Amino acid sequence: MMAHVLMAVVLSLVQRGTAAEQTVVFVCEHGAAKSVIATAYFNKIASERGLKARAIYRGVHPQAELSATALKGLRDDGVQVPDQSPAPITDDDVKAATVMFAIGCALPSKVTASGKADDWADVPDDQGYAPMRDAIKRHVERLVDDLLKRQGER
Image 1: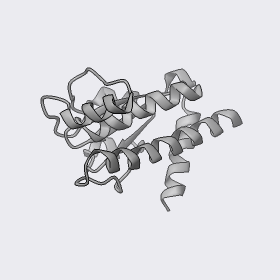
Image 2: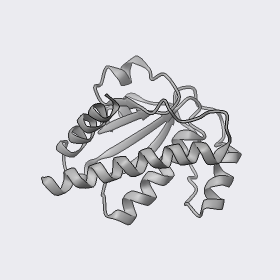
Image 3: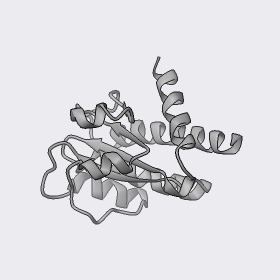
């Protein structure tokens, strides 16, 4: 079932506008860890593979600062660390997004009603940075691969 949802989301992503216009929005509860990790890895992998879509991170109930654990993990991994504070999902984010992924949170109704939302509910919450990163990275790599495949079919 999840594979069908992902393929529908990917097809939708590729069909909307040009690749340069595509924005992926990752959302977690506080906009400070999971969505930040997903954004950092998506932007890194997409850039390395020539995919022009880019990601941003948001929170349902954003905290004031990014997670120190997530930032340390990204630095240790050699991945560029974001510098923006956590921010809430806005109507403009929903409008500009090609697709949005919830990571361990329930999305506001304005997001789910947009038809652009999917979720990665299997990302662990309580096992530390590495298992969280590994699960997110698997999803991101699959998403980028699918987007590149669809982009090539256009």
